[in-house]
Image (cartoon, rainbow, N blue to C red; front, side, top):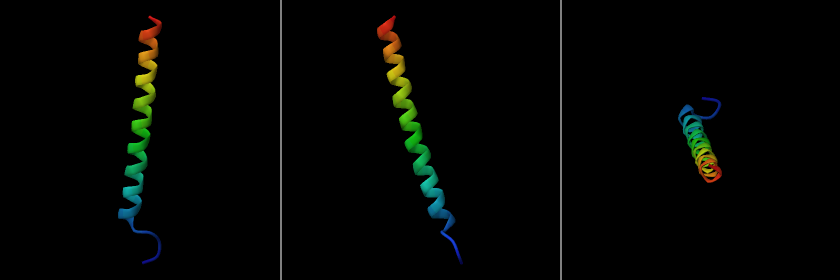
Length: 39
């Protein structure tokens, strides 16, 4: 069977999505804290 296994690609995709979600959450929390500080 040529090509990488679907399970491996799925795991990579899930890992990347989780990493992106954590990054976005940290960014949004930082923005919210900065907005509270401004107000």
